Image (cartoon, rainbow, N blue to C red; front, side, top):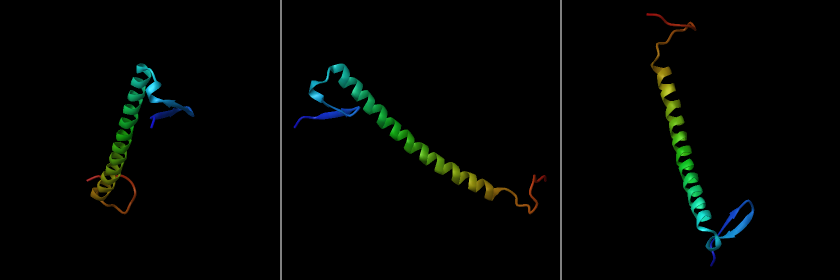
Length: 71
């Protein structure tokens, strides 16, 4: 079975692509994978940031009056 790739709604036979086109496709696939990894890492970091922000709020001194607390 022939391997194909669809770009801009056009299906291309991989065997008939030029070497340059194949290399560009490989580079594009690599960049897409790296972006997926970075997006996943950003989600993890955002979750950690929210947890640290909540922990900071819990660690701050409590005062019933709103405003700055000076010791």
